[in-house]
Length: 175
Image (cartoon, rainbow, N blue to C red; front, side):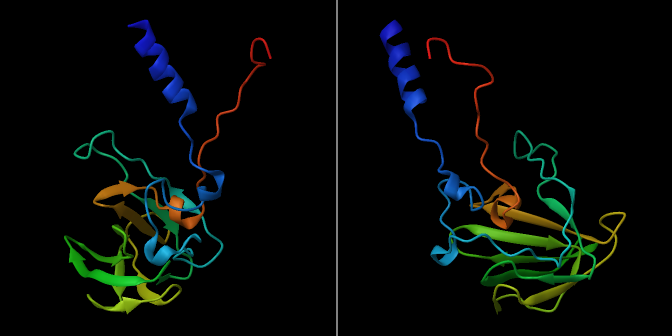
């Protein structure tokens, strides 16, 4: 039994971590659309401020904040990457826009009034919508990203998050 534990411990200790080069790209195992390895462009003009961070729920049915709220000073939403408009319309009481970027990656934005229609091809940087008031106390847009149906932090694609690197807090014994 101890041998199994040692083998498991060795396997975990020698498992490769994601390369730092992927720090600003999609999570490990996600193939970016059209083999694009650069981060997306931000969907709003500078200066950029994340008002509310991503807080994924422990289980899909539990509460959480499945995206980030980004201050939107100029009120215009631009496409962060090439894709095809998957949805542009109303959901309950607000305008919602979603873009299929390929590879199972879909981005979504709310509250917006879209300039584009379902099925339309969009390019990185293209104006997509006017950002509407009502989601935050200041003008903002909620940005979400799903990969194969599971929500992920949009900051992984926008270059605002990095892979964590754990460093020792004290010298390693015997070293």
